[in-house]
Image (cartoon, rainbow, N blue to C red; front, top):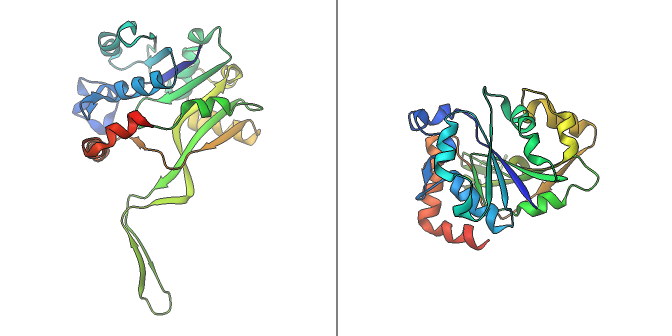
Length: 237
């Protein structure tokens, strides 16, 4: 059975005061909590077991989702007594991964329609697979002729397809638990080492929706996308 773990233990400091009483994955955008968008996405792709890795305001998740029966899935909670970081949070959830040889790990602050099963299926010959999306520029880009200084192209906040960023959706086989510290960062302490050992695969995605919600501006942009008809695109992709 496919299992997905959602990293949902962070404090969401940049979204205060919204996160003073609500964990970031439960903040609503487009009429639903971020975590609800994620659950819909996971269920659509066949995941029937979901584990929330929680710490800050952990009870809020249990109150919201319970055992998952209302979603037709099994939801469990890996509770961190203290913040363990993304690597420690995953290691803390090892007990929930018995009986499976592969798992999906998702950052708790993203909304996307990329196919997570492609990430899982890319694991052959590797310990981990990391999804990538083209870098979205936060600025408008201007191209001009260096000699005449005439503007040749003006693009507002384009996708820069020559550069890729971590999309926060990972596939791992169970060997990953041997590489995890009790406390620490997946992105700083684990993935660079796996890459240096050639145990990490890249899974690039183009032409997908992806947004990490870290600031109020991010919330506004996702809200605008969903209100403009993007919700249908998320469901149909």
